[in-house]
Length: 271
Image 1: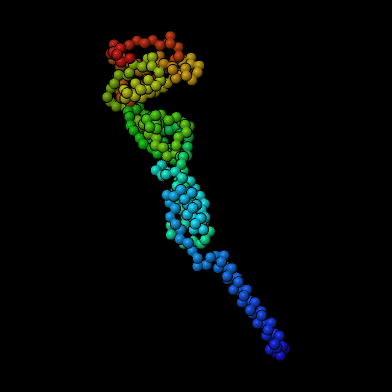
Image 2 (image 1 turned 120 degrees about the vertical axis):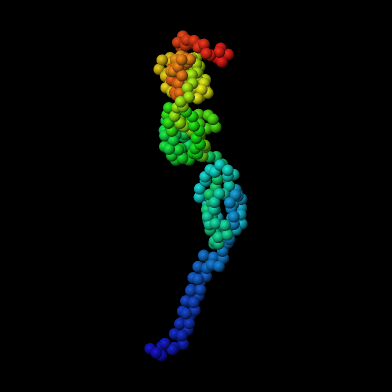
Protein backbone atom coordinates (compact mmCIF):
# COMPACT_ATOMS: atom_id res chain seq x y z
CA UNK A 1 0.00 0.00 0.00
CA UNK A 2 2.79 2.40 0.92
CA UNK A 3 4.47 1.48 -2.33
CA UNK A 4 1.32 2.56 -4.20
CA UNK A 5 1.18 5.88 -2.34
CA UNK A 6 4.63 6.74 -3.54
CA UNK A 7 4.10 5.42 -7.02
CA UNK A 8 4.55 7.73 -9.97
CA UNK A 9 0.96 7.37 -11.25
CA UNK A 10 -0.51 8.16 -7.83
CA UNK A 11 1.63 11.29 -7.40
CA UNK A 12 0.66 12.49 -10.87
CA UNK A 13 -3.05 11.97 -10.15
CA UNK A 14 -2.69 13.71 -6.78
CA UNK A 15 -0.95 16.68 -8.36
CA UNK A 16 -3.65 16.93 -11.01
CA UNK A 17 -6.38 16.75 -8.34
CA UNK A 18 -4.72 19.41 -6.19
CA UNK A 19 -4.22 21.64 -9.22
CA UNK A 20 -7.84 21.15 -10.22
CA UNK A 21 -8.98 21.96 -6.67
CA UNK A 22 -6.83 25.08 -6.61
CA UNK A 23 -8.26 26.27 -9.91
CA UNK A 24 -11.79 25.52 -8.67
CA UNK A 25 -11.28 27.52 -5.47
CA UNK A 26 -9.69 30.37 -7.45
CA UNK A 27 -12.61 30.30 -9.90
CA UNK A 28 -15.18 30.42 -7.11
CA UNK A 29 -13.52 33.41 -5.44
CA UNK A 30 -13.11 35.12 -8.81
CA UNK A 31 -16.81 34.61 -9.53
CA UNK A 32 -17.75 36.02 -6.10
CA UNK A 33 -15.50 39.03 -6.65
CA UNK A 34 -17.03 39.71 -10.03
CA UNK A 35 -20.56 39.12 -8.77
CA UNK A 36 -20.15 41.40 -5.77
CA UNK A 37 -17.77 43.79 -7.56
CA UNK A 38 -15.34 43.40 -4.69
CA UNK A 39 -13.29 46.55 -4.24
CA UNK A 40 -15.32 48.43 -6.87
CA UNK A 41 -17.70 51.03 -5.37
CA UNK A 42 -19.48 54.09 -6.72
CA UNK A 43 -20.15 57.30 -4.80
CA UNK A 44 -23.87 58.15 -4.88
CA UNK A 45 -24.40 61.54 -6.55
CA UNK A 46 -26.71 64.26 -5.22
CA UNK A 47 -30.13 63.90 -6.87
CA UNK A 48 -32.22 66.30 -4.79
CA UNK A 49 -33.82 69.04 -6.86
CA UNK A 50 -33.27 67.20 -10.15
CA UNK A 51 -36.00 66.07 -12.51
CA UNK A 52 -36.59 62.36 -13.12
CA UNK A 53 -35.09 62.71 -16.61
CA UNK A 54 -31.92 64.24 -15.15
CA UNK A 55 -31.74 61.49 -12.52
CA UNK A 56 -31.96 58.80 -15.19
CA UNK A 57 -29.20 60.40 -17.26
CA UNK A 58 -26.81 60.77 -14.31
CA UNK A 59 -27.40 57.31 -12.85
CA UNK A 60 -27.15 55.57 -16.23
CA UNK A 61 -23.74 57.14 -16.73
CA UNK A 62 -22.65 55.85 -13.31
CA UNK A 63 -24.16 52.39 -13.99
CA UNK A 64 -26.73 52.80 -11.25
CA UNK A 65 -30.51 52.39 -11.28
CA UNK A 66 -33.36 54.30 -9.69
CA UNK A 67 -36.86 53.61 -8.46
CA UNK A 68 -39.53 56.14 -7.43
CA UNK A 69 -40.42 55.15 -3.89
CA UNK A 70 -43.13 57.77 -3.33
CA UNK A 71 -44.53 61.03 -4.67
CA UNK A 72 -45.90 63.72 -2.38
CA UNK A 73 -47.17 67.25 -2.85
CA UNK A 74 -45.28 70.07 -1.14
CA UNK A 75 -46.57 73.58 -1.69
CA UNK A 76 -43.19 75.29 -2.17
CA UNK A 77 -41.45 72.50 -4.07
CA UNK A 78 -41.02 72.45 -7.85
CA UNK A 79 -43.27 69.73 -9.26
CA UNK A 80 -41.58 66.60 -10.62
CA UNK A 81 -38.27 67.04 -8.77
CA UNK A 82 -36.49 64.80 -6.26
CA UNK A 83 -37.18 65.58 -2.60
CA UNK A 84 -35.29 62.72 -0.92
CA UNK A 85 -32.99 59.88 -1.90
CA UNK A 86 -31.80 56.61 -0.37
CA UNK A 87 -28.88 55.78 -0.19
CA UNK A 88 -27.77 59.29 0.77
CA UNK A 89 -25.32 61.54 -1.07
CA UNK A 90 -21.71 60.23 -1.17
CA UNK A 91 -22.65 56.78 0.17
CA UNK A 92 -20.55 54.05 -1.49
CA UNK A 93 -22.54 51.41 -3.40
CA UNK A 94 -21.96 48.65 -5.93
CA UNK A 95 -22.62 48.92 -9.64
CA UNK A 96 -26.30 48.43 -10.62
CA UNK A 97 -27.45 49.40 -7.11
CA UNK A 98 -30.98 50.86 -7.07
CA UNK A 99 -31.30 54.40 -5.67
CA UNK A 100 -34.77 55.05 -4.23
CA UNK A 101 -36.13 58.56 -4.70
CA UNK A 102 -39.15 60.53 -3.45
CA UNK A 103 -40.54 62.95 -6.01
CA UNK A 104 -42.73 66.05 -5.59
CA UNK A 105 -46.17 65.90 -7.19
CA UNK A 106 -47.08 68.53 -9.78
CA UNK A 107 -50.77 68.45 -8.88
CA UNK A 108 -51.81 68.36 -5.20
CA UNK A 109 -53.99 65.58 -3.85
CA UNK A 110 -57.69 66.49 -3.63
CA UNK A 111 -59.73 65.80 -0.51
CA UNK A 112 -63.39 66.21 0.36
CA UNK A 113 -64.01 69.11 2.74
CA UNK A 114 -65.40 67.83 6.05
CA UNK A 115 -68.29 69.60 7.77
CA UNK A 116 -67.02 71.20 10.97
CA UNK A 117 -69.68 73.91 11.40
CA UNK A 118 -71.20 73.79 14.92
CA UNK A 119 -68.27 71.69 16.16
CA UNK A 120 -66.12 72.85 19.05
CA UNK A 121 -62.88 74.48 17.93
CA UNK A 122 -60.76 71.64 19.36
CA UNK A 123 -62.68 68.93 17.49
CA UNK A 124 -62.78 70.97 14.28
CA UNK A 125 -59.01 71.50 14.27
CA UNK A 126 -58.39 67.80 14.92
CA UNK A 127 -60.68 66.75 12.09
CA UNK A 128 -59.27 69.21 9.56
CA UNK A 129 -55.68 68.22 10.35
CA UNK A 130 -56.58 64.55 9.89
CA UNK A 131 -57.56 65.48 6.31
CA UNK A 132 -54.17 67.16 5.75
CA UNK A 133 -55.61 70.67 5.94
CA UNK A 134 -54.24 73.75 7.70
CA UNK A 135 -56.29 75.90 10.05
CA UNK A 136 -56.56 79.60 10.82
CA UNK A 137 -59.20 81.17 13.04
CA UNK A 138 -61.04 84.44 13.33
CA UNK A 139 -63.51 85.44 16.00
CA UNK A 140 -66.84 87.16 16.12
CA UNK A 141 -69.59 87.59 18.70
CA UNK A 142 -72.05 84.71 18.79
CA UNK A 143 -74.36 82.92 21.18
CA UNK A 144 -72.44 79.73 20.33
CA UNK A 145 -69.27 80.11 22.40
CA UNK A 146 -66.06 78.48 21.09
CA UNK A 147 -67.86 76.72 18.26
CA UNK A 148 -67.37 76.98 14.50
CA UNK A 149 -69.75 79.37 12.75
CA UNK A 150 -68.28 79.28 9.22
CA UNK A 151 -65.63 77.42 7.22
CA UNK A 152 -63.99 79.37 4.41
CA UNK A 153 -61.14 79.34 1.89
CA UNK A 154 -59.89 82.69 0.61
CA UNK A 155 -62.97 84.46 1.95
CA UNK A 156 -65.47 82.08 0.31
CA UNK A 157 -67.59 79.54 2.15
CA UNK A 158 -66.51 75.97 1.40
CA UNK A 159 -69.30 73.41 1.52
CA UNK A 160 -69.06 69.91 3.02
CA UNK A 161 -67.76 67.30 0.53
CA UNK A 162 -66.51 70.01 -1.84
CA UNK A 163 -63.20 68.91 -3.39
CA UNK A 164 -60.25 71.04 -2.27
CA UNK A 165 -56.47 70.76 -2.41
CA UNK A 166 -54.83 68.87 0.40
CA UNK A 167 -52.78 71.34 2.42
CA UNK A 168 -55.26 74.20 1.89
CA UNK A 169 -55.76 76.65 4.74
CA UNK A 170 -59.28 76.65 6.15
CA UNK A 171 -60.35 79.82 7.97
CA UNK A 172 -62.75 79.03 10.80
CA UNK A 173 -64.98 81.72 12.27
CA UNK A 174 -65.30 81.03 15.99
CA UNK A 175 -68.03 82.32 18.31
CA UNK A 176 -66.85 84.22 21.39
CA UNK A 177 -70.21 84.83 23.07
CA UNK A 178 -72.56 87.77 22.79
CA UNK A 179 -71.54 91.27 23.73
CA UNK A 180 -73.43 93.43 26.21
CA UNK A 181 -73.47 96.10 23.54
CA UNK A 182 -76.91 96.41 21.96
CA UNK A 183 -77.76 96.86 18.30
CA UNK A 184 -80.90 97.02 16.15
CA UNK A 185 -81.46 94.10 13.80
CA UNK A 186 -81.14 95.06 10.11
CA UNK A 187 -84.24 95.17 7.92
CA UNK A 188 -84.07 92.06 5.72
CA UNK A 189 -87.53 91.69 4.16
CA UNK A 190 -87.32 91.24 0.40
CA UNK A 191 -83.63 90.23 0.37
CA UNK A 192 -82.16 87.01 -1.01
CA UNK A 193 -80.25 84.66 1.31
CA UNK A 194 -76.86 86.00 0.19
CA UNK A 195 -77.87 89.64 0.59
CA UNK A 196 -79.50 88.98 3.96
CA UNK A 197 -76.43 87.15 5.28
CA UNK A 198 -74.21 90.05 4.20
CA UNK A 199 -76.45 92.51 6.06
CA UNK A 200 -76.49 90.32 9.15
CA UNK A 201 -72.72 89.93 9.18
CA UNK A 202 -72.25 93.66 8.62
CA UNK A 203 -74.33 94.27 11.74
CA UNK A 204 -72.10 91.98 13.87
CA UNK A 205 -74.93 89.47 14.17
CA UNK A 206 -75.18 85.85 13.04
CA UNK A 207 -77.53 83.98 10.75
CA UNK A 208 -79.73 81.66 12.78
CA UNK A 209 -82.50 79.31 11.67
CA UNK A 210 -83.44 79.45 7.96
CA UNK A 211 -86.86 78.18 6.92
CA UNK A 212 -87.80 77.18 3.36
CA UNK A 213 -90.81 75.00 4.20
CA UNK A 214 -93.35 77.50 2.90
CA UNK A 215 -91.07 78.65 0.11
CA UNK A 216 -93.01 77.14 -2.82
CA UNK A 217 -89.70 76.95 -4.70
CA UNK A 218 -89.52 74.34 -7.46
CA UNK A 219 -85.95 74.47 -8.78
CA UNK A 220 -82.56 75.08 -7.18
CA UNK A 221 -82.48 78.45 -8.93
CA UNK A 222 -85.82 79.29 -7.31
CA UNK A 223 -84.35 78.52 -3.91
CA UNK A 224 -81.34 80.75 -4.56
CA UNK A 225 -83.63 83.57 -5.64
CA UNK A 226 -86.08 83.10 -2.76
CA UNK A 227 -86.52 86.19 -0.61
CA UNK A 228 -87.05 86.86 3.06
CA UNK A 229 -90.69 87.46 3.98
CA UNK A 230 -90.22 87.21 7.75
CA UNK A 231 -87.37 87.66 10.20
CA UNK A 232 -86.86 87.25 13.92
CA UNK A 233 -86.01 89.54 15.63
CA UNK A 234 -87.66 92.23 13.54
CA UNK A 235 -86.25 95.67 12.86
CA UNK A 236 -87.72 97.85 15.56
CA UNK A 237 -86.32 100.93 17.29
CA UNK A 238 -87.75 99.64 20.56
CA UNK A 239 -86.11 96.21 20.25
CA UNK A 240 -82.33 95.97 20.53
CA UNK A 241 -80.34 92.73 20.66
CA UNK A 242 -76.87 91.84 21.90
CA UNK A 243 -74.06 91.91 19.35
CA UNK A 244 -73.49 88.34 18.20
CA UNK A 245 -77.13 87.32 18.50
CA UNK A 246 -78.76 85.19 15.81
CA UNK A 247 -81.36 86.36 13.30
CA UNK A 248 -83.81 83.73 11.98
CA UNK A 249 -84.90 83.99 8.34
CA UNK A 250 -88.02 82.72 6.53
CA UNK A 251 -87.94 82.53 2.73
CA UNK A 252 -90.52 82.38 -0.04
CA UNK A 253 -90.73 82.40 -3.82
CA UNK A 254 -94.27 83.79 -3.63
CA UNK A 255 -93.95 87.56 -4.06
CA UNK A 256 -97.45 88.03 -2.61
CA UNK A 257 -96.13 86.95 0.80
CA UNK A 258 -93.48 89.67 0.84
CA UNK A 259 -94.90 92.75 2.54
CA UNK A 260 -92.22 95.40 2.59
CA UNK A 261 -92.83 97.96 5.29
CA UNK A 262 -89.88 100.28 5.69
CA UNK A 263 -89.27 101.24 9.33
CA UNK A 264 -89.06 104.95 10.02
CA UNK A 265 -85.44 104.62 11.10
CA UNK A 266 -84.33 103.32 7.65
CA UNK A 267 -83.80 105.72 4.81
CA UNK A 268 -85.00 104.59 1.41
CA UNK A 269 -81.49 105.41 0.16
CA UNK A 270 -80.21 102.31 1.97
CA UNK A 271 -82.57 99.90 0.25
